Length: 390
Image 1 (cartoon, rainbow, N blue to C red):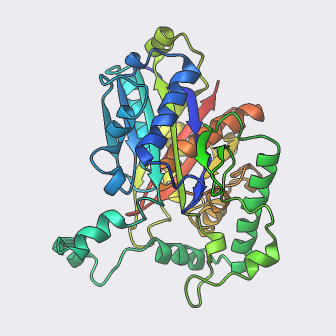
Image 2: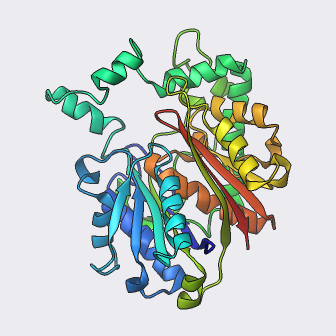
């Protein structure tokens, strides 16, 4: 079986809800990332055999196969097919897995895995709420309700359940949120994100044109006291908006090839896919799945957590990576070293390849070898990807 290599990775800087990227249609935003991947590899775009794009809110401007619409909004020719994937927050990480599997099988040689979410223009939950409001029912079928009686699946409830199960205090979670911003500030000021960000032109409120190149969610004036003063999300809970991922607009993508693709494109690989895992877990606590998924991935890869140089664990809520650290025995100094979604934003379907782009770049800058990425996903799912920097 062939190997799968990543030869290019790019992302937009995140935009707050109603913020600097609010004027960008998601298909155009994703199209700019596709263009950047082509530009960085100097590949003939006709050589790209498929585009697999993650997106959670596949409604409104993200409906009717957002992946194909992004291709049609880009410089890629009409001959390039595309399909959209929804594995909730892991959608573009799953897109990467599908792309890797395609080139490893030899059925394709050059595939782009990407993701996009405009949470400003397609609000979270819109795909489920609109049909219900218009009398077309809800996603929970009668058989699901029989199996999970009186259960309303909720990531917020799941995040609090994790905090309580693993005895994570509010102080511990507040400190994690504070450190996410501190690391993101340091990375931004050091130019650590420069190589991975695709600049997008925006129009400011005063009508001026400028390029969006800095993640808008970072609070450069953050203080621990300020975070401690934020109201709890739930009565007697432990999480707040300051220890939860930020609603975000953004897009990202990676180009994946096999050995034949490397020769055809004449490019050097950035990283090799070492291992891929996806599991299903308890859909009620929901966000705990990265823990058993990581354990399974390491076992299948014949590795230990100590073998991994850097980790990217999505900060959906501070309780998720904190519990992950506790249960895996991972070194906290290796975790989300440039900050995470609490500071940088979580554009749902766009986050998987966003994290991968950051992981590849930080491995390079720190001259490290192995990276592991995982994230919790709605429905009690989790993907894990282990890569080797080349």
